[in-house]
Length: 184
Image (tube, rainbow, N blue to C red; front, side, top):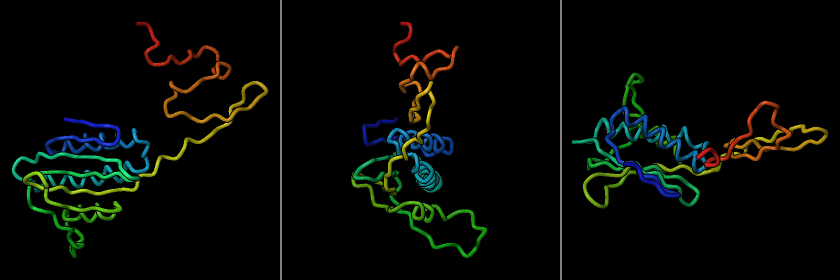
C-alpha cells in the first residue's frame, strides 16, 4: 500500500529483495517530484541498507513501513518494523573480507543524522536517517537563434508542457499537444 501527500509518502511492504528494488524506485520518484534529484542516490542507498537489515534480521514476518517526509529543509527516511531488537552500529571489522555488518555505518556516513528508537505505538522499532534538502539546480540555459533575433530558452523538464515558438519548430515536426487536448 502506498499513500502520500504533498510532503509525505508512506509505503507498507514485505522486505523481500524484489520489493527493495521497488522501494528504491519509489524513493527516487518521490524525490524527483519534490525536485530533490541530488539526494536520490544517497536516499536510495540508505533505504536499501535499512530494508536489507529488515530482510535479514526482522522476525517473524519482515513486514515494514517506509516513510519519506520533507520538512523544515530536510528529508527523513524511516523504516518501521515489528522486531523489537534495536540495531547497533558496529565498529569496522578487522577482517576486510567480512561481507556484512557495515550497513548502519554506511547509513551514518551518507546521512547528516540517523537514529533508532522503539516504536511508540506497539512492538518494533523505527530506524531513520535524514538528508539536507537542497532543490535541484536549475536547468541550463541555451541560446536559440530564431531568424535575426536570439532568445535565451530554459530547457523544460517536461518538454510537452513547455511553450514552443512555432518559428522554432522545424518543418514537418508536429507541434506538442497539451495533455487532455487530444481527440476525445
